Image (cartoon, rainbow, N blue to C red):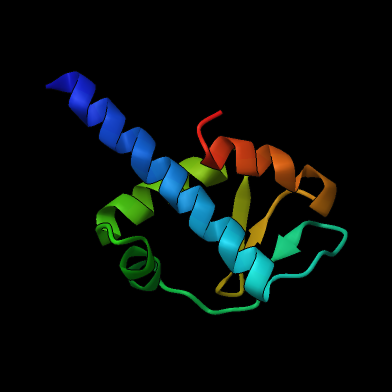
Amino acid sequence: MRAGLDYAASLNRREALSLLLWLFEKFGYTVQEGCPIDLRLTHQDLAELADTSCVTVTRLLKQFEMQRLLYRRNKHYVLLTLEPDLPKLRSLALGL
């Protein structure tokens, strides 16, 4: 049972990272402090886009902030990586 939960958590993490990367590619831009996504998104919006629960999105976003992958500024998410580092995020999203 625990292995199934670990797999589901890993899958949710990859899907959330993939969603953030897709949002950056569609609505983001690069500045010195990172890559802001120029959309105001609630946790509920992200949950609906990722087909998961709001609780899961909140937990994952907190994890990503603790891992310094992103932060939130003025209701916008900012990926803490510059464009050349996006392949690293993509490999995380793919579980590589």
